[in-house]
Image 1 (cartoon, helix red, strand yellow):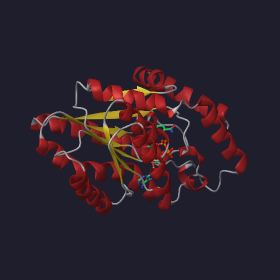
Image 2 (cartoon, rainbow, N blue to C red):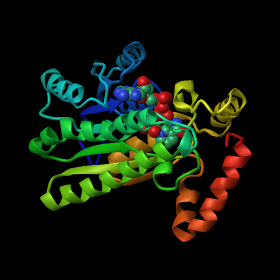
Image 3 (tube, rainbow, N blue to C red):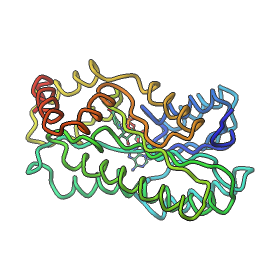
Length: 280
Ligand SMILES: NC(=O)c1ccc[n+]([C@@H]2O[C@H](COP(=O)([O-])OP(=O)(O)OC[C@H]3O[C@@H](n4cnc5c(N)ncnc54)[C@H](O)[C@@H]3O)[C@@H](O)[C@H]2O)c1
């Protein structure tokens, strides 16, 4: 079924909601077995039941991707739980947003966003990649970045910085693995706006953004956002085909290619969209 990797064991971080949940279900429908993890244990339990209901072998354990220790403990647990030498696919998906102007983004918010969105991917790769290389054969790491990792928007400087970093680390790691002759490929996923819970967490919005602006933001996500299933299907297809860069969801392809053609035009469009959405 998978031309790039064997069907087998797929681990998804941030599997309890949004893109992570949809990706877990899409892989289950494609015949894979799942390892699910998330910081939200209660919601994880529900997705675990959904995946099992589709007939896949599934194990689940809560873990915080921002913790190197918890991710290494998760890897040791997975080694004992699954009847395979290594994961076939690792999906580093867990992430959080932060909306606020640069000067309204406090150091604690920078640290949290960096720890989850950037170090979460680093910790995931460090915990699982050695076994994946050692086991040999075709395997794949999928890093969920964002369109904001290729084309930045205003008032998300911390988020955009981490997603640009994920794009950079993925490309560097991909080249390094090729140099080594390892058969582990890297896919970087850059979704546009997807209707999930990410923008609907008040704690991840600067206090200077008032309730009316915040409401406009959440409405904008609900109105403009694609279903997370669109990203999930693109991820399964990319793993099958060995695709390295996935641009998916509203604006992702046109904006990325416009940006390659003219930075100025792309920025004009981004500013126009931010103003019309009414949250800046
Ligand atoms: N929704 C969008 O518009 C959009 C666009 C581009 C990229 N993304 C990226 O997609 C990924 C998934 O986001 P989503 O939109 O599905 O959001 P979501 O909030 O619906 O789901 C994120 C999941 O990650 C989990 N999580 C958060 N911090 C964690 C941690 N420290 N350790 C483990 N799990 C943690 C949450 O509990 C939640 O279940 C993120 O990396 C996000 O940046 C989202």
